[in-house]
Image (cartoon, rainbow, N blue to C red; front, side):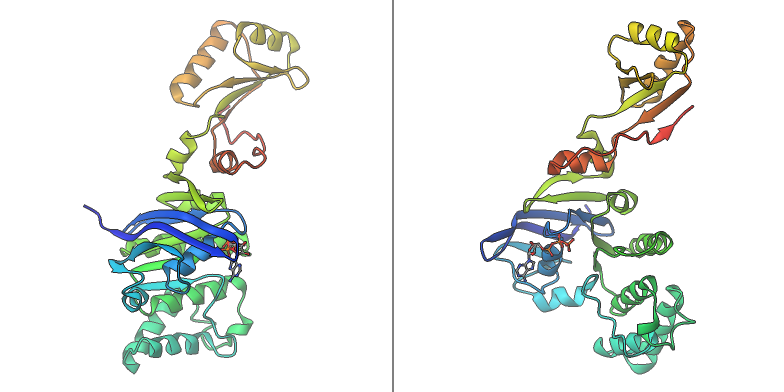
Length: 318
Ligand SMILES: Nc1ncnc2c1ncn2[C@@H]1O[C@H](COP(=O)(O)OP(=O)(O)OP(=O)(O)O)[C@@H](O)[C@H]1O
């Protein structure tokens, strides 16, 4: 049986009369990436602060890496690393000095500290910048240094609070690669993000935080199955072909202006084949066939009651 790196029950937190967390349960198996997804102000950072012992919950319990959050806070702190909005990087000193300072904080012997720092600077592609002040680093370099510093203590659970917010696409992809590599060594990653795409890319399991509660939880695929919205779209250039298809396909919704038909479908090979077979046998030629499968945007907006996602085809098959 896989054990849980994070197990939380009924976490509550209010600031004044604002309820931020209203009974949050979490179960994160060891060696996996878990993503807590939510819009600005949903309470993601508050959850990270509670689970990393920085803030005390008003109610509920949690065990992190097997240690009770309230009774064994020191053991929890020794087992975790936290990076994110509250970066530990000191701008006035170099990247290497930041690393060595971290090694000192973890009471590593000097030679061991140097070895670990060099290894991590190399791993995070910071060797060239190592002797430069951190103030000269780009946003992506600073995040990499931040994570490298967190790894000095060999944490079993890492909290990454919005690790890619504000990064350009290239740095974001580098960060994703780093996060994936973290779990291959057995580390557990608890990631908060506002980016659905990021959760979809990285997370084994995703929880959507809304109104202080977990509105839904599951793998990206499981969450996508929660919302309807999958369809196939046929676009015609010949109005006569469009009308014939519309008349024959009773269940399709038509848009006369764009000569487009929309047919509810799960996008499976079987359903696509039957649509194509039907078109062939009726001698109707569609200009274009596109498949729209629900994505995390659809899930997120369905759960949080926002505006529906732009109705864009995600995958063209012909
Ligand atoms: N120390 C505090 N005192 C008062 N209110 C707070 C405090 N910390 C957070 N809040 C409030 O709690 C709510 C949740 O904040 P939190 O930072 O956890 O959200 P978040 O989901 O991490 O959002 P973001 O994506 O903007 O970081 C917000 O309304 C915030 O204003």
